[in-house]
Amino acid sequence: MRHRELLILGVISVVIALVLQTIVSIVGNDLLSYGVADFSYTSTGITLVLAVALAALIEESIRVLILFYYARLKGIPDNFWLYGSTFGFGFGLTEAMMASGSASSIWHYIGLLGIVVIHTLLGIFATYLIRYFKRLRIIATISLLVIVHSTYNLIILVVLPFFEGNIAL
Image 1 (cartoon, rainbow, N blue to C red):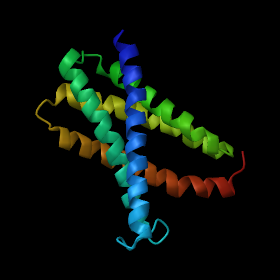
Image 2 (image 1 turned 90 degrees about the vertical axis):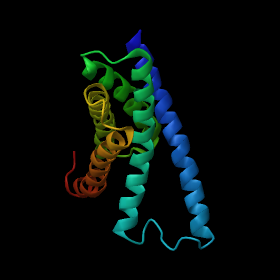
Image 3 (image 1 turned 90 degrees about the horizontal axis):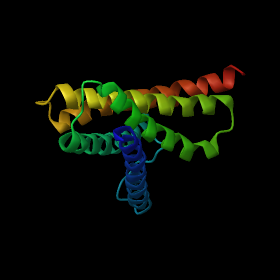
């Protein structure tokens, strides 16, 4: 029963994260169009890093908060990796399914598989931190996950297009 709950919570958390990301994107675009902010997504690499970090911050905050409160209600047993992978798989599979409509090459599908894998691994990492590092605050857990998630996203955004143009599968 717990695995089903965690899978459903993973799906719910990605929906919440995507809604929040959409709101942030709309607000950000409004700020750009009214000249309040003087940067655009194409202007610098720093903007790309900030956009990737913000997306990761939203996703990881939702993931950690839901897992933290689930752990407080029901606990996380010693086989934390199974619980984390179930939650992360639900999160990653839902995100990949929502993004699959824009896939046009084998490299896009490899990227979608990467989404499922990274979210499964981050789910395991999050449950590990919550289970064994009780004194590690939520902010520290979110920060660690955001660093890992942002690094992965930046590697995918920089490396994947290189392979797409140079290696045909």
